[in-house]
Length: 381
Image (cartoon, rainbow, N blue to C red; front, side, top):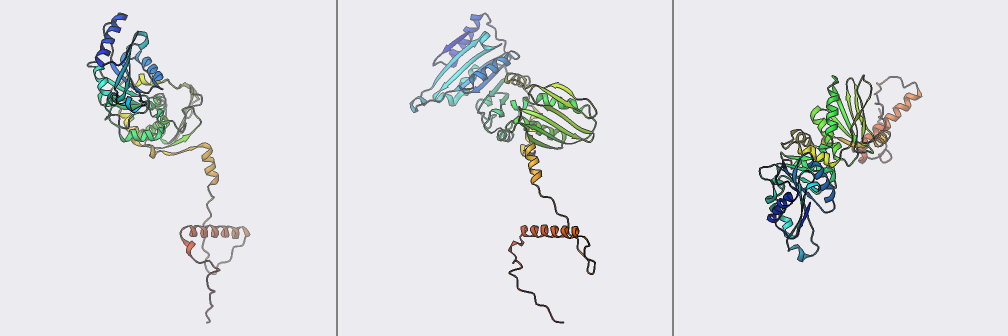
């Protein structure tokens, strides 16, 4: 059932919710939390669908906040609140209120949301796009126990991770972190079967996917080893390789659905590792409302402490361009015989040339060349 309210108030919206519940024969309220979804008009449909699907596991009152941008300066000063009340099959297992804020009221969304919160129930705020830099001090974020963002939706996902680390407060979380839960579970189970010492690790995935960085930071933080971040064509995360003293451990996924787990001394096995929908990620985050200390520790490890982002082709090209180090030049004692072979002479000439080039790079370029130097006079004795 849907009820449209134009130029309304929070009091009228509450009355509309009661009227809608009575109309469908469910006057009692059986929701476990209030989910506030902050989005824009372009992404409202997808965000609302994900919230409704997640509510089938967590019955909730979903408040969708859409701040409408006024086109004229006159309309910016005119505040208006439109609402759409949905109850029943149109709202998943709970009830939904879509709030559209116009004018000055869009700057005070918390005043509209506060009277609509369920009493004595936890509050979760999810920014599907354009999350504020400091979610804990945001007016809407201050009303909640959990604050959910999505770094993948940001314009610069890796920079978004840095911002999240700088402004982290207990209760913050990221859907990019929920995306790697199956990977973390699979790797933890694999390490339980191996007694070898882990030497290093490499995580490969799409360049603009922050889940790759989060998984690499988690491994580096928990294993205390150097972790390198590599680039692949995707989709999403594609491979984790752990170098151990007993051989490599590899978890590789190429199609976004099935992965191959390879352990030293054991046959390869196929494991299910599919990419999940946003509704599944959101439902996972709603299962726990306490601070996620593991996420906080991995996030604070820092993106900049990982190995450089480099694809396999770039690594091969860099190795080909690296110059071959010259052999060291050994001094010849006075009175010792000259080198007998032509190859030794050529090696010495090459080494001398490399040494001269290194000296020039170190600052010897300012010295006069042999052509500019005056001739040396022999002393008569």
